[in-house]
Amino acid sequence: MIVIIGTPAEDPVRRLVDAARAEGVEALVLDETAAADWNLRVGSGPEGRYARLAGADGEVDLAGATGLYLRLTAPGRTGPVPDPLEQDRHDAAIALAAGWADVAAMRVANRPRAMASNGSKPYQAALIRSFGLAVPPTLVTNDPAAVQGFWDQHGRLVYKSASGVRSIVHELTPARGADLARVRHLPTQFQRLLEGTNVRVHVVGAAVFACEIGAATIDYRYREGGEAATMRAVELPPAVAERCVAVAAALDLPFAGIDLLRDDDGNWWCFEVNPSPAYSCFEEPTGLPIAAALARWLAGEGE
Amino acid sequence: MSGRDGQGEIVVAAARGDATAATILAALRRRGRASRLVDEATLARAVLEHRPASGAPGRGTQALPGDRLQLPDGGVVGPGTGLLVWRLDTFPLAAVSAGHREYADAEAFAAGLSWLTGLGDKVLNPPDPFGLAGPRVDLLRLAQLCEQAGVATAPFELCTNQAAARPGPTGRAWVWQPPGLPDPTQRWTPHPAGPPLPRPVLRTAAVQPAEPVLVLDARVVGTAAVPGEALVALAAAAGLRCAEVSTGTTADGRPVVTAVSPVPGLRAAGQFPAFVSYLERRADRTIEEAAA
Image 1: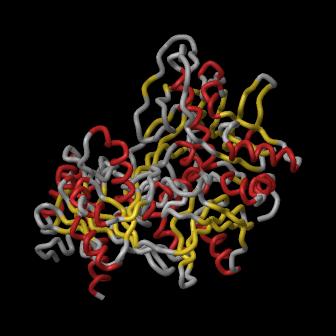
Image 2: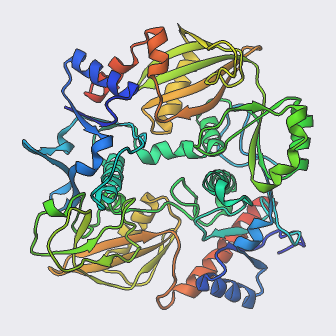
């Protein structure tokens, strides 16, 4: 059995549930939107650590699963909440599930403690570099003069959030540069702008699925009035694929969405390793069998 | 040992009301050691220029040359610093309105985590995404780390719904305040009398606490109910070079670990001078390495 914690209607969860069924893997789905109703007990005693979920049909020993997929997206709540303790139970259930995922003796995609490296992009980038992939020259500063010097050094820069809070990647244009004094209010991340082809790589254990992205914008996730990004499955050079697997393993992220760029000189750069990839956006247009690979990996197959 | 821009200093970053930090600094000054307190108000006016490790693959996460935190009085915290003792949970460099506070705090924390990591051994404890002062250890993580180190924790159970919690003869319940797993170093609110409610709960065995001990690399300062080697292994497993470990004894006489903290309170006898000497040794070593 594998355990899936998330919102069943959300694409990555839905696809994994479907893939597990197709692969003949039994899946227990814990609906995040109903977390306030979970009867979850996690503890540690003479018998070791345990996690048990009580339901209408009795108690399930979650520790008996082979794998756990955790995709918490904090969906919005709707409608009246007559029970004042509901929010407490919801928060407690989510915290407890995440805490258990951190210590559960099974395959986990991914452990929250490991996922947290992505909460600081420059921190994660330094780790990525130390594990074998090049990362763009970066400056984090609240000093406008330092930004100007970095800009002069590299010619073209982008700026983007340093934390896990999502933001659109923008080029630092002369017009935006006129506002550089605002940097004084908050340390901001600047990077050398790299030009080339974006490649998204999904690592599942030791398996690699890559797709090339054609986009007219710097941040291909956003059209900004232009054409939508196009995607096609590609094979990575073996050395790059090996490094992707090695970086994901070193970050303890057996399921990872790695954002690469192959520059015009053929060099490979890594922007970040997404610890909870919305892989469905890449699987759907390319046909890459990511969900099936994830279901099999969670069931104990492969490395 | 100290230049005018803070070379070789021991810097303590702490809240203004942190009495332990103030006492550490007073002790360092009595010993003639160049040191300074950096509090939230100072950090709010500081200028960060952080150049994280980047470019072609390479070993380590040490920041690149030019990395520095310029303080309002001209002092600098950076590669020339002797040792940085970070006792804050935040990196309070953001100066934004309340409407942007949540985003700004996340951004500043991200910047701080990267900057502190780039300082390497010059920071007392390596920071991690769960704590700039060093990894915070919740109850479940504590149980896992104790298992690795070969020591016991007090039995506990966290339950999302108290009404479904099992009764237990040795159990003593506290209300669990969500969100998040309980940090064992916190004080928990005693459970109110009355019938079970459908609310989250923590039950744990009663423990007779001993004085916390201090682990400084391979040395243990203080007497614990648990063997010293195991506590050293526990701190190392938690990713801490300096840790305060709380121990105790259960009602049936079993020695257990109850908490590990990266921010020592230094309340027990003998810990204070040992800690200050440790800071000096660490700072001396980083200065020597920088000079070599």
